[in-house]
Amino acid sequence: MIDSIEKYRLFDLILLSVIAVVCEIVGEILHITLPGAGYYLSFSILIALIAMIRWGKWGAVVYIVAGIPMIFLHDSSVIENIILYPIANAFIAVSCIVFRFVDRDRIKDNIIRLFLFTVTAYLGVSIGKGVGIFILTGVFSKSAAYYFLTQLFNMTMVFLILIIIKHRNGLLVNMNTYLLQHGQKV
Image 1 (cartoon, rainbow, N blue to C red):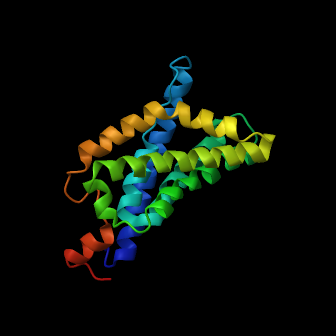
Image 2: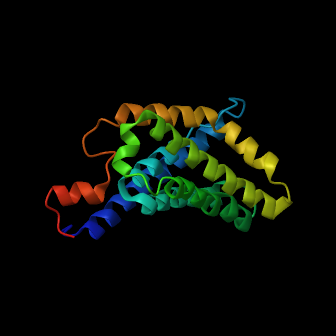
């Protein structure tokens, strides 16, 4: 039985992490199957953004976990893949840092804030990829910019989906506040 916010958060983050992992694996399979498509489409970052609106910095764990399958799906060394996926994915937390003074319920209520929240997440991950590639090769700016540019289509799709789902009751909400308002014990 889920009798506390902490247990509910753990359950929710595990469930969202599983969904994000599936999204990342499907996205990678599509990327391999359609190599000339010119874009990458994966909704794992969407799931992570939902988790971050729900749980704040704890939601970043979802995207870190989503990077774990990439360690095994790519031909690079395990160390390289750990740096380029789970560790680089942790930089999604940049959105939480930038928006730390904004109530998470207010992020979805304003389309500009929602857009900036989405963009800062992608910029954070791009910086993480850039740092990872810099550690491995000594090149930063080109790799971070390249990653960000290859993600523009994905970022646009994620933002549009966030706009569509923002009115779903109980989905894009600060869960601490939501559960307290609905009588959940702390």
